[in-house]
Amino acid sequence: MRFATFATLLLSSAIASAYEVGLDADLYLAGSARHLDSDFEPAEDDFEAVNNASQLGLGGHFRSGDLSAFVRISGGEKNAKAGIEALRELYAGVDSPYGQLMLGRGASMYRTSGERLDPFYDTSIAGFNGREATEGAGYGLSNLSNGYSKQMVSYTTPAIAGLRLNVAGYFGEEDAPNDETDMGYGAEYQVQGMTADKDLIIGVQYLDIKNPVSFAAGNEDRNEMLAVGGSPGISESYRVHGSYRSGPFSVGASFEHVDVAAEPEPRGYLLVSSSYALDDKTRLAASYGMLDFETGSPALSGNGYSLGVFHNLGYGIKSYLAARWVELDSAGEAATVAFGLSYSFRRKKSWGA
Image 1 (cartoon, rainbow, N blue to C red):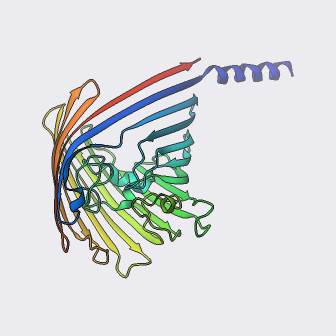
Image 2: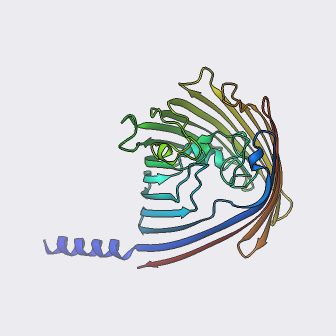
């Protein structure tokens, strides 16, 4: 009995001594000087300085053995046109050998699977609909690649032979038109056995949205009832995506099928992007976006072309010079040129025993 008590105390002491507590703060300041010349958005034609998703984040974690708990909150300037509140992220979760469980406000897996393929994400060249934008997705990605999802519960499996699965539920506000849960499912496979400087990832993400409320630019009350950021209302959507990296060269592609119940024809989105690192500080990027959305009002179907150069100035400061030309099938053309600067700062502090 005494031995069992001693062993229990010894084990408890070992567990208690193997822990780490960490706090971190991050600051992202980004802005650009942008000129937009648009046939279908003349009120926005101008040369101006704009904010590109600047924000402040705070986080923390507690780690003991293979188990880790984490929290994060981040905020920035409200963007009513993009439907983004000042509070951007507020979530907590647990990491373990059995996967990651997360709940709160954050970016959906559907969004992040497209965001990471767009080299011009959060720049101020024309956005997902060819119109004025200061942050978020470029032309060729749907609005589901923007915004933050509220009251999200998600689970992601550990990678097994390169395959990782995810599932998420998105819960609407109490005053939303229905109480059904929007659901998301996905899978991603990283090809195994490649060399250190090569990487190939393919995946699919699916969203089943039951909430009939759709995103409306500038309508804060309406957008607060969305469970999934950028939702088009009752719909079924899927994204098939892939990326390949070899040394300084990378290429990515995304195809989305967005079938909205209130529209007679599904929408189709295509984004193909590429980048090439000239050296460890300078990178060239290009993308092509296509949108097939004949039922839009006004019609948003068209083609978009983007070019840019990104340069790391050091000390957390980066710069870019980018241009995008969008030609819509029925509403004319838009051309944007922007020069931007950003500053990133992150400070971590850990304690352990």
